Length: 77
Image (cartoon, rainbow, N blue to C red):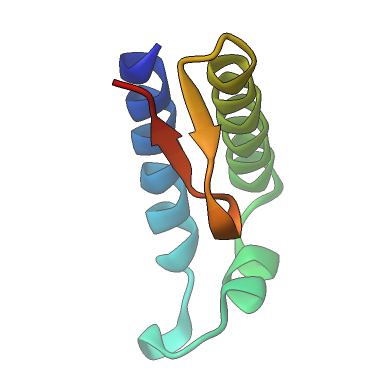
C-alpha cells in the first residue's frame, strides 16, 4: 500500500510542477497558476489529488497508516 501512496504522490507532484510552469516569471501564487493552466491539466491534477486522498484513506482504514497532526500520513511498522 505504501508503494501506491508513493506513486500517487509522485503523480500529483509532477502535475503540480506542470501547473506551476504557468507562473509568469516564476512569481505567482498557486491559485493564479492553476487558473492559467489549461482545463485538461487542471482536471488531471484534480483527479490525481482525489486518487491520492482515496489511497491514503484506504491505508488508514486498513490499519496500515494513521493521520498525525496537520493531516500528515504516518505508517505503522
